[in-house]
Amino acid sequence: MTLGGGFHALKKAFMCIDCKTIMDKCINWNGTISESNKKCKYCKSENLVPWDKLCPKCKSEMEREELGFWD
Image 1 (cartoon, one colour):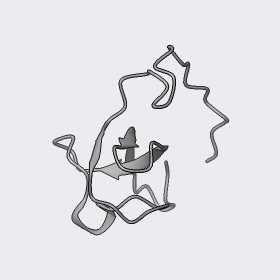
Image 2: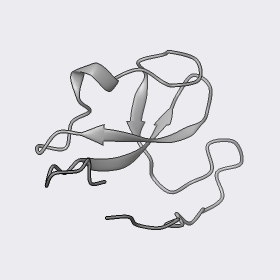
Image 3: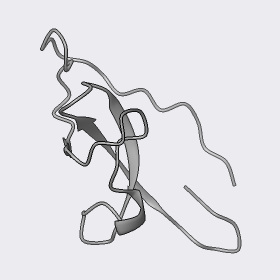
């Protein structure tokens, strides 16, 4: 994601173990979630794990769809 003026942010999909939702989070260059972004945006839990492409409810395989890019 471009934040304007040449700044970039890396995003990765994570799953909340507590509420079983999948969300994108901004990550640091080393692949960890940034300190200010460690909580689930729905239930505020900090039990986030990288998403393994399985549905958190039924365990069937899911596909990630890119919605678009902007400059």
